[in-house]
Amino acid sequence: MTFTGFEVSFGLFSIIAFGIISLKLKIVDFSGFIAGLGIGWVIFIFGGWRWFILILTFHIVAGLSTKYKYEVKRKKGVAEEKRGARAWSNVLANGSMASLLAILNVYNLNEIAFAGYLGAVSTAIADTLATEIGLLSPQEPRSIINFKKVLSGTSGGVSLLGEIATITSAALIGAIAYLTQEQNWSLLTILSISVISGLVGSTFDSVIGATLQAQYKCIKCGKNTEKSRHCGKPSIKIKGHRWIDNNIVNLISIGVGAAIGIFLFFM
Figure 1 (cartoon, rainbow, N blue to C red):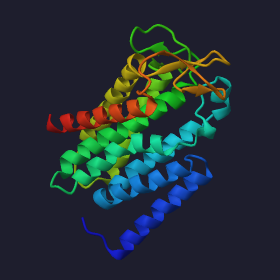
Figure 2 (figure 1 turned 135 degrees about the vertical axis):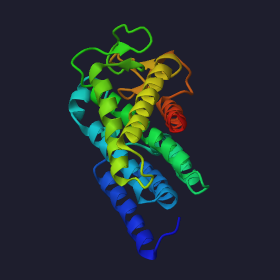
Figure 3 (figure 1 turned 45 degrees about the vertical axis):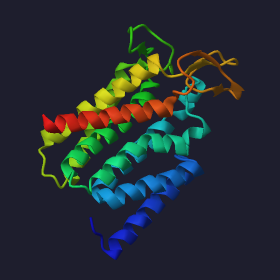
C-alpha cells in the first residue's frame, strides 16, 4: 500500500491528535497513549484509513462506555481503576491481533485479513461494552457456566443488558465497515461477520473468565474482583490461574473472534 506525503502526514497527525485527546480525557494513561500510537500507526500504514477508522471507533466507544455512569460503577465497586484510564497492557491486549491482521493485509490476503480484522475489532468492542454497560444492569448477572446469579463484576457473569450492548456494538462496527469498505461486500455479509464474531468472541471471553481467569476477593470490601489489588490492598485469590488476567483473556477471545471472522468468510 502506497501513500502520498500528505496522506502520511495527515494520518500521523490524526493518530497523535486522537491520542492526546484520549490522554487528556483520561481514556488512557501515558503508557496507554504510547502503546496506542504504535497500534494506530501500524494499522494505518498496513491497513489504510478504512481499517484505522474501525479501531478508532472501538477506542472512542469503549472509552466513553467506561466513563459512562462511572460513579455508579465505582460505588458498586466494579469500576475500572484510575477513572477508567487504560494502560499499555490493556491497549496491546485489545489491539495486537488487529495490528497483526493489518500487517497480513499486504501479503495478498486482503479479504481474508479484513474478515479476521472485522471479527477482532467487533469482539473487542462487544466484550468491552458487554462489561461496561452490563455492569449497570438493574438485575444481578448470571454465570455463563451454570446461569446461577452471581455478584456484579464477577468474571463470567452475563446480563440481558450486556448482551444487547454486545450485539449493538458489534453491529455498529459492521455498519461502519460497510460504509467505508473497499471489498464491495454486501451489508448482510459484513453484519453477519461482525455480529456473529463479536457475540462468539465475547461469549468465549465470559467462559474463560468464569473458568480459568484468576478471581480474587477484596479483604476490605468483600467484593469479588478480577484485580489482585482492590480498595488499595492485596486481594485474596479464590479461583483460577494467577497468570490468566483480564488482558490475557481479552487477547485470547479477540483471537477467537478473528478466527470466527475468517471462518465465516469461507462459508
